[in-house]
Image (cartoon, rainbow, N blue to C red; front, side, top):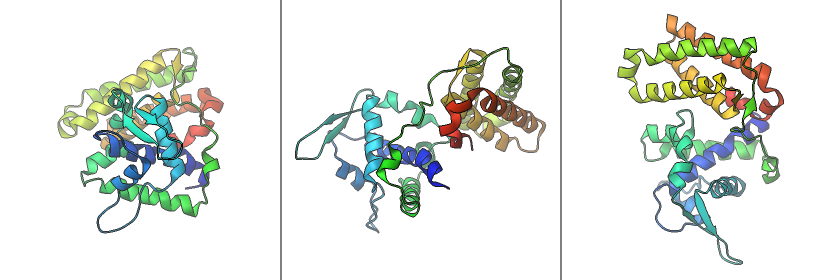
Length: 256
């Protein structure tokens, strides 16, 4: 992993870690409280150790209305979750490709998150990352991006994605074996399809669509449905390459 890719991805893990730590908190908390949430008894490693990424996550949550902040000229800032917290983190909780969902799925008392954060911190040091590296903002991945519905690549992506979505949704074996995964995949495929049928998409929805197709491709590998899904994935990526342009440059790693 190079430094640029790390800067794009790493804050997501701190965001997910802080969401995990404060989701069921009562009352106010401080940054030191957060750090204490991920210290295991057999060691003294502080998993939320990078101040800049903690600040990025807290600033994002505050800007989204998920937490409130009480500042003090000498003492630590105090934070508290708001009534909007669960609504704000809904996408984070539901994203099957994200660290929050994987940590919850691992079901090992946040061990998965601790190990992931430890590796994030290790890469931070090895790559020589500095706070100023996070100063430039990446494009808003949920900002609408206009597309031309008459473009052949868009029409082909809609056609193939429709076929793949129908195939996945109607597969009873998938629904019986992996019901929760299947529901999330179908939801994201339908959402992506709706956006491609409209006059605007977003990098966020394209990311969710690509990840859903990748998940389905893995489940249906070496089958006719798998080939259909792979075809839809290639068609969606053609739309990304030909129609998103410079808006995608800062977020290309989301599709790797």
